[in-house]
Length: 270
Image (cartoon, rainbow, N blue to C red; front, side, top):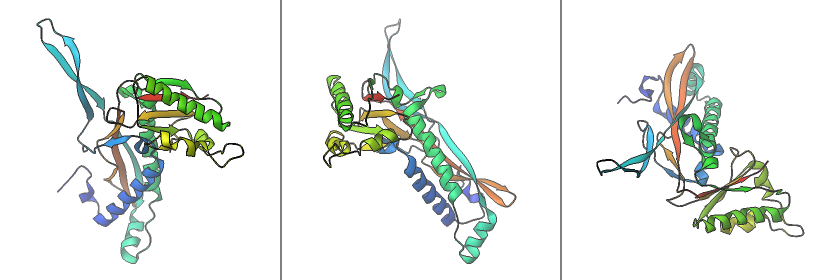
């Protein structure tokens, strides 16, 4: 059966597609931090163009009727094309020469970076806000984490603020790379690190997130917290042949569905 992936038009077997999919998804998982931080819902399928949440009241009309509309988030499609040599495929099929899929891996990493940028920073021109701009987020400064004691003070202080707002967890934490490694610096004279100390407070995990430039994001890891919605899971589609190269696109669609206001805390560095 023909699908939008157009794999039926490719002159190579399903086994090659399976290898491309496996390599691409493995490479994407190396990069993705948002999916380790948040609950993932879906996939809904390629045809899904928006994420729909609960109905919100708009108020009462002059006739006395009440009007409600669903909360809707666009599901952006992310894709990246790479070339796969026809001669390399022939050598793989004819004599078992290893098929090198490094271009597929790098294309998948680029898509994963774009996904995390949408999750954390949003896509303002499409009306999608990210975790760093989450409605009602608790905003705090991130101090100098070269002092391990300051790490705990900042993060536990943020949890206290979320508790005060009635957002009691469980929590998960995403940290910019430079600050993540500071979590691993032991307290003077001990083998204890802030990472070890803080793990019980973050039942949802502590994640290194390159999409955060400097700082940290704490989220409620509950059904009322923010979630990632996947339309199309990462897959490879056949675009045709140009000369001695097959053109293949990696495609996915993903968006951030917001949680209740105040279900996120943002610690900003410089």
